[in-house]
Image 1 (cartoon, rainbow, N blue to C red):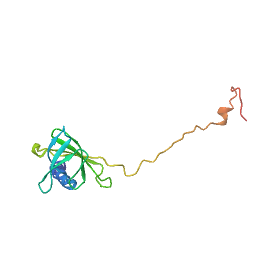
Image 2 (image 1 turned 135 degrees about the vertical axis):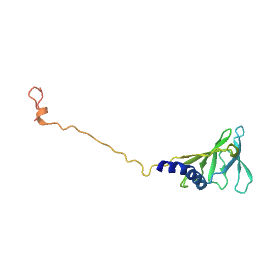
Image 3 (image 1 turned 180 degrees about the vertical axis):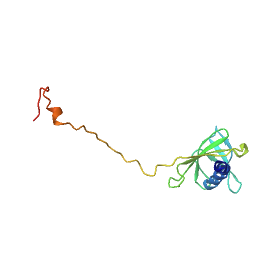
Image 4 (image 1 turned 30 degrees about the horizontal axis):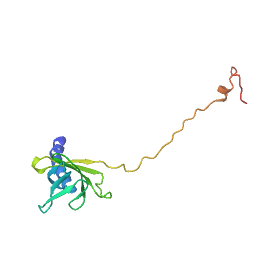
Length: 134
Protein backbone atom coordinates (compact mmCIF):
# COMPACT_ATOMS: atom_id res chain seq x y z
CA UNK A 1 0.00 0.00 0.00
CA UNK A 2 2.85 2.39 0.88
CA UNK A 3 4.53 1.78 -2.49
CA UNK A 4 1.29 2.46 -4.37
CA UNK A 5 0.91 5.78 -2.56
CA UNK A 6 4.49 6.76 -3.37
CA UNK A 7 4.00 5.88 -7.04
CA UNK A 8 0.75 7.81 -7.17
CA UNK A 9 2.42 10.89 -5.67
CA UNK A 10 5.51 10.75 -7.90
CA UNK A 11 3.99 12.69 -10.85
CA UNK A 12 2.65 15.34 -8.47
CA UNK A 13 6.06 15.70 -6.83
CA UNK A 14 7.80 15.95 -10.18
CA UNK A 15 5.34 18.62 -11.27
CA UNK A 16 5.89 20.52 -8.00
CA UNK A 17 9.66 20.46 -8.51
CA UNK A 18 9.18 21.83 -12.03
CA UNK A 19 7.27 24.76 -10.54
CA UNK A 20 10.05 25.43 -8.03
CA UNK A 21 12.64 25.35 -10.83
CA UNK A 22 10.53 27.74 -12.94
CA UNK A 23 11.52 26.08 -16.22
CA UNK A 24 10.95 28.06 -19.42
CA UNK A 25 8.49 26.69 -22.00
CA UNK A 26 10.20 25.53 -25.20
CA UNK A 27 8.24 26.16 -28.40
CA UNK A 28 10.72 25.00 -31.06
CA UNK A 29 14.43 24.69 -31.84
CA UNK A 30 16.71 25.28 -34.82
CA UNK A 31 19.82 23.10 -34.69
CA UNK A 32 21.47 24.80 -37.69
CA UNK A 33 21.29 28.24 -36.06
CA UNK A 34 21.88 26.89 -32.55
CA UNK A 35 18.83 28.71 -31.25
CA UNK A 36 15.55 28.00 -29.50
CA UNK A 37 12.21 29.77 -29.19
CA UNK A 38 10.72 30.02 -25.69
CA UNK A 39 7.35 31.30 -24.49
CA UNK A 40 7.70 33.91 -21.76
CA UNK A 41 5.42 34.13 -18.71
CA UNK A 42 3.44 36.86 -20.51
CA UNK A 43 2.97 34.66 -23.59
CA UNK A 44 5.56 36.41 -25.78
CA UNK A 45 7.83 34.35 -28.02
CA UNK A 46 11.54 34.91 -27.34
CA UNK A 47 14.44 33.59 -29.46
CA UNK A 48 17.64 32.67 -27.60
CA UNK A 49 21.04 31.56 -28.91
CA UNK A 50 23.14 28.83 -27.28
CA UNK A 51 24.93 30.35 -24.27
CA UNK A 52 22.34 33.09 -23.71
CA UNK A 53 20.37 33.50 -20.45
CA UNK A 54 16.63 32.86 -20.69
CA UNK A 55 13.83 34.89 -19.13
CA UNK A 56 14.78 36.40 -15.77
CA UNK A 57 18.28 35.02 -16.23
CA UNK A 58 18.08 31.94 -14.01
CA UNK A 59 18.53 29.48 -16.89
CA UNK A 60 21.07 29.42 -19.72
CA UNK A 61 20.59 27.62 -23.04
CA UNK A 62 23.41 25.05 -23.23
CA UNK A 63 22.52 23.16 -26.41
CA UNK A 64 19.65 22.44 -28.77
CA UNK A 65 18.43 19.20 -30.27
CA UNK A 66 15.80 18.44 -32.86
CA UNK A 67 12.91 18.68 -30.43
CA UNK A 68 14.58 19.58 -27.11
CA UNK A 69 16.97 21.97 -25.40
CA UNK A 70 19.46 21.50 -22.57
CA UNK A 71 19.46 24.20 -19.89
CA UNK A 72 21.71 24.94 -16.93
CA UNK A 73 21.50 27.35 -14.00
CA UNK A 74 23.36 30.65 -14.58
CA UNK A 75 24.15 31.73 -11.00
CA UNK A 76 26.69 29.57 -9.16
CA UNK A 77 25.29 30.75 -5.80
CA UNK A 78 21.82 29.45 -6.68
CA UNK A 79 20.82 26.50 -4.43
CA UNK A 80 20.09 24.53 -7.62
CA UNK A 81 23.37 25.53 -9.34
CA UNK A 82 24.27 21.92 -10.13
CA UNK A 83 20.89 21.28 -11.78
CA UNK A 84 20.52 20.78 -15.52
CA UNK A 85 17.28 20.26 -17.40
CA UNK A 86 16.32 18.89 -20.78
CA UNK A 87 13.07 20.53 -21.87
CA UNK A 88 11.04 19.29 -24.80
CA UNK A 89 8.91 21.32 -27.20
CA UNK A 90 5.46 21.87 -25.71
CA UNK A 91 3.78 20.15 -28.68
CA UNK A 92 5.57 16.87 -27.84
CA UNK A 93 3.83 16.58 -24.47
CA UNK A 94 6.97 15.12 -22.85
CA UNK A 95 7.93 16.05 -19.32
CA UNK A 96 11.30 17.70 -18.74
CA UNK A 97 14.21 15.59 -17.55
CA UNK A 98 15.82 17.09 -14.44
CA UNK A 99 19.44 16.19 -13.63
CA UNK A 100 20.62 17.16 -10.15
CA UNK A 101 24.26 16.67 -9.22
CA UNK A 102 24.86 17.90 -5.71
CA UNK A 103 28.38 18.45 -4.40
CA UNK A 104 29.33 16.51 -1.28
CA UNK A 105 28.53 18.17 2.04
CA UNK A 106 32.19 18.23 3.08
CA UNK A 107 35.18 17.50 0.93
CA UNK A 108 36.72 14.15 1.72
CA UNK A 109 39.65 14.43 4.10
CA UNK A 110 42.85 12.90 2.75
CA UNK A 111 44.01 10.06 4.93
CA UNK A 112 47.41 8.49 5.05
CA UNK A 113 47.65 5.12 6.71
CA UNK A 114 51.12 3.78 7.38
CA UNK A 115 51.57 0.19 8.34
CA UNK A 116 54.82 -0.88 9.89
CA UNK A 117 55.97 -4.34 10.76
CA UNK A 118 57.32 -4.76 14.24
CA UNK A 119 60.47 -6.83 14.17
CA UNK A 120 61.43 -8.78 17.19
CA UNK A 121 65.02 -8.97 18.34
CA UNK A 122 64.95 -12.77 18.10
CA UNK A 123 64.09 -12.52 14.37
CA UNK A 124 67.12 -10.32 13.72
CA UNK A 125 69.64 -12.15 15.93
CA UNK A 126 68.92 -15.57 14.57
CA UNK A 127 71.88 -17.94 15.03
CA UNK A 128 71.85 -18.87 11.35
CA UNK A 129 72.14 -15.24 10.30
CA UNK A 130 75.70 -14.22 9.32
CA UNK A 131 75.17 -10.68 10.68
CA UNK A 132 74.18 -10.08 14.23
CA UNK A 133 72.81 -6.84 15.51
CA UNK A 134 73.69 -5.73 19.05
